[in-house]
Length: 140
Image 1 (cartoon, rainbow, N blue to C red):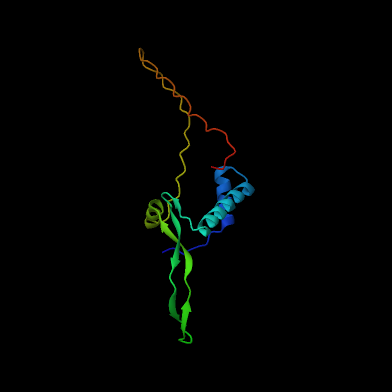
Image 2 (image 1 turned 45 degrees about the vertical axis):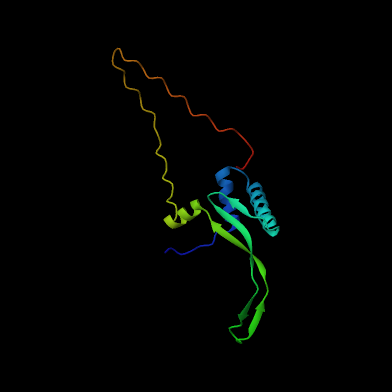
């Protein structure tokens, strides 16, 4: 198994900024706002479901008696709320399959000079260029 590495929020923000063409400041604000909303919803006891990704929910952990391993003293542990994350289908499949392979670079298409058509042949209609994506300021 490969050595595990830690990816920071800053690194994710840099990647997202590069992928979306947005500034790092804007991306950082969006990411932080998203994380703050998750925290707010969970603190209110709400469940968050992101299809294909996973589900965050708050569960109550019952009070129990535990033992201090150093002193062997019995200790009462109070009830507490904990966040549970259940992995979604897409994440589970990607993790089971291992890291996604690096995207192969698309071959550069070079225009070729057209071959002369045989006499009497109908020339094919040229294909129109694909429509350009709409220009928006949204990072999504």
